[in-house]
Image (cartoon, rainbow, N blue to C red; front, side):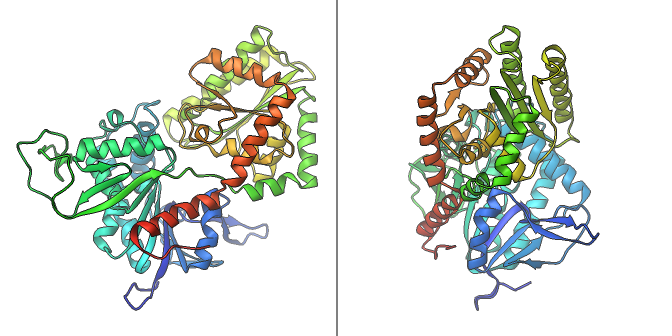
Length: 511
C-alpha cells in the first residue's frame, strides 16, 4: 500500500463506502475472482478512479476475513475487515436497526442500543484509518452514505490536509425525529468533518442544517454552516439552542446562534440528486434479444391489455403492502378485471435475518396468495410475485413489458427504479405512478404523483394510468425521458466533485 507523504505517494482520489466496488464470484470452472459491481455508484465513479489515480476503501463482503489491498482493472481496492460481531452490531444493528428506520420517518420502530453505537464508532474509525493510510497528500476523499457518518470528522483529525466530501444516499429526518437519536451530536459532528455534504433532496439538506443549528448552535447562512475551529467558552447569557462536545453524555451548554467571532470553517450542505447510468439502460432497450424477451414476458402473463409493475427491495419503506391493497380492492369492486390487467411484483431479498423483514415477507406472501386464489383464471394470473434478484438485462425487459410502473415508497432517498423505467421506454409510451415521498418526485414532475398512504388516491392513480389518453401519456413520458437523459449519474458525480473543488480550492477530479 502506498504511504501518504508530501512527496506525492498515495492516491489522489479516494472513495470510501461500506462495500468495495467489486463482488467476489465463482466462475463456471470452479475458480474464483472479482468482478465490478453493477451498481450506479460504481458506474459513476469508476471512470474518475481510472483517470485520477483512484482508490476505493470498503468491506469486501466476507466476515472474519482479512485481505491485502489489490488492484482490479484501473482501481486500487483497500479491503476493510469486518468481524461477525461487527456485521451484527455495526451493520445490522446500528446502521439498519437504528439509523435506517429513524431516517425513514420511523415507519418501523428504531432500536437504540449503546453497544451497537460503540461498534459503529469503532468500525467508522477503522474505515477512517485505512483511508488516511492510502490517501495522497491533499487528496480528495468522498465518503458515501449513512453507515459511515462519523468518518469525515475522524478523517479530518487524522489528515487535516485532505479535501473531504460526504453524500447521504437515504433521507435525512426532520429535526424532531433526529432528536430521538441518543448519539445525535456525535453524528452531526462526524458529518461536519466534511467540506461538502450532499443530500438527495433540498428538504433533506434543510433538515440537516436545522438539526445543526438547533442542536449545535452553529450559525447557518443559506447552505453554509460556520463550524468553529476551536471549542468556544459557553455564553451563559444567550438562549439554549445547542450543546457542546459532551452533549452525548448529557452536558448542556448555552451557545450563540450568530456569526462566530472567532475563526470558523465553512461547510456546505445542499442537494445533489443522484441518477442512473442512462446510456447503459437505453442501449440495452435497443437490443433485439431484450426486445424479444419483453414480448415473451407479456405472452407468459397471458397477453393482458395492461401490465402493472412494481420493483423493490423487500423493505417496509417501499409501500408494497399499500400497492397490493389498492390493486386487490380494484379487482374486488370490478374496476379492473383479470385478463384486462396483471400485476408483476419483483421483491428482491433484503435483510432476511432481521425480524421485521421476515414478518413483512410473510405478510406479502399471504396477500399474494389471497389475490391469486380469488382472482386467477386458468389462462390469466392476477398477480405474479417474484422474490428474486435479476440481472439488469432481465430488468430492462420487464420495464419494457410494463405499461404502468408503480413506485409507491412511503419514504425513499431517491428511488432509481423510477428513472430506470423511464430510460428503458423505447417510445413515448408507458405511465409512471410515483410517490411524492421519493426524491425522484422532485425531478419527475410529469409522473402521476400520489400519496401512497392514501389507498383511495393510489387506486384512482392506477385507474387513470390504465386508461390515460395516448397523447397525454406520450407528452408526459417525453418530458420524463428528457430529464433522465440530461441528468445521468455521471453528471451527478461531476456536479458534486466540481462543487467540492470550488469550495476548497482543490483540483477538481475529472473523468
